[in-house]
Amino acid sequence: MDGGRRLSVPGDLPSDVQTVLSQLLEETETALRTDEFDTARQTVQTAATVSRNKLPECELRGQLLHGCGEVAAALDPADGVEDDIAAEYVRAMVQRVPESD
Image 1 (tube, rainbow, N blue to C red):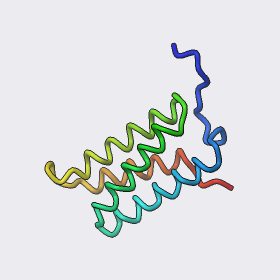
Image 2 (spheres, one colour):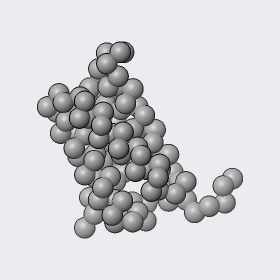
Image 3 (tube, helix red, strand yellow):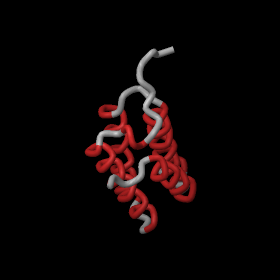
Image 4 (cartoon, rainbow, N blue to C red):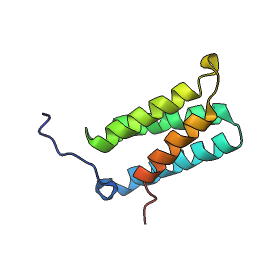
């Protein structure tokens, strides 16, 4: 066990981190809807970096990193882009990181 504080509720997120993650995930959703896969790859990579660097070890961090990894894999042009799978993961992540007040 890590003994550290488990951050599992979006209300525990620092507001600046919450805002940045929400914006990045919204940009990823928009890019997927408009078939701008390079943009989607970049924004989801940035969301993963923010999650890795700004969130403490917690359930939410793990979920976001997993989701970002799955989106990146679904958008890998070498394996054939699966934008429907990517979109589902992004929607799930958006639900976990609602927009700040």
